Length: 197
View 1: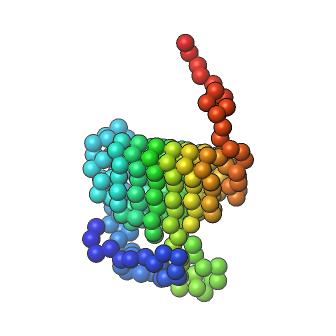
View 2: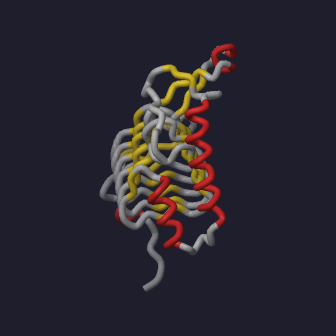
View 3: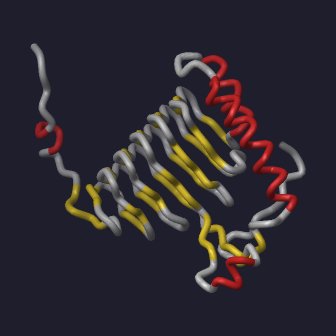
């Protein structure tokens, strides 16, 4: 995927109806389609495709199909990354994930914001804002992470949340919009139930 068109960060640009961007998206969608046709257990072939699609990929990366993204090369993933089924990333600009990130099913990360004014929106005007997810983050099922969001290290995002703006490190946050519920404390090490002998 060479000759990549540059998307301006935090500036208005014509994202829709733009042949250069559409050509890049088409190439990426073909790779995603190829990826999603694989057996979910074919880790070797998955790794080969992901290494071509993603901008940077750490060790032990698992993305359970289906997986869709727009460009791919704007996405960086750290070590020991796991996402469950149906991860969607609209990566008009940078989307970065740290190490040891867990993503539950049906999560969406979108860097795009479209114009509120209908005439500007019809003209394809949009803005792209980067998303940053820290280390040791767990994002619950059905969550949406919006353009410009940042999630700090060690944080848990509850299921069904809509994340915008900045969520600090070491907290449990949940809701629409996502808000901090409490800090993560030493008590959480013994709060989780352990079963068996």
